[in-house]
Amino acid sequence: MSETVRTVQMAIPRMVVDDQEPVLPIARLRDSAGTSRTGCPFHDVRHMLRDVGLRPTRQRLALGWLLFAKGDRHVSAEILHEEAIKARFPVSLATVYNTLHQFTEVGLLRELAVDGSKTYFDTNPSDHHHFFVEGENNLVDIPSTAVEVERVPEAPEGYEIARVDVVVRLRPKRRS
Ligand SMILES: [Zn+2]
Figure 1 (cartoon, rainbow, N blue to C red):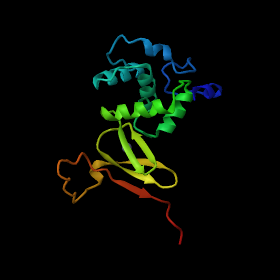
Figure 2 (figure 1 turned 30 degrees about the vertical axis):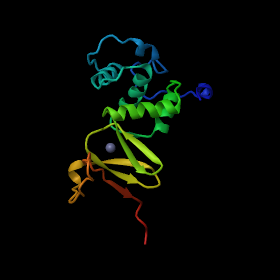
Figure 3 (figure 1 turned 45 degrees about the vertical axis):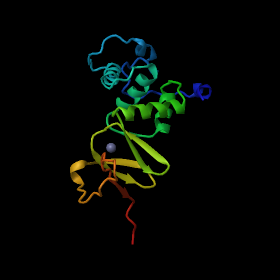
Figure 4 (figure 1 turned 60 degrees about the vertical axis):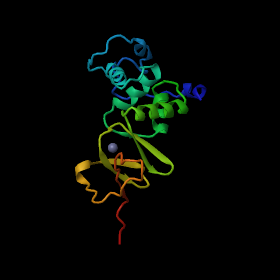
């Protein structure tokens, strides 16, 4: 998959640490010294990974940086894969999936299955709910305090409720 991506060239988003650097500065990811927060997204991602016990590999650092440097957002594996390729970080979609699931397992991300075929990963893992704009595939956060779930069924024997996700589906108003 990575063979075909070399031709793709695009300006990197503005959150790149060094404006002079047109590509994801992979070389920096090898420098594993220093774990303190410096305001540099690379160091923060490394710190973040260490905190949850994940080894800061090159792939995790690069994908972590792409994921978290833009603040709270909802991304699919496909979107992140595209972003990695645009940042000239050749990585397979399978690796992106694996990494997203690893991040989810350690609580860095929250997985949102909005409908059968679409899974989004939320970079804000705290409790909250979502509006989903049908047709636009757009997720918008709803603060947890804005939704009250009055009755939750008992969990089946041997289980406990991990959390309750509410997805409120939106569509444009129909004109009458
Ligand atoms: Zn969210």
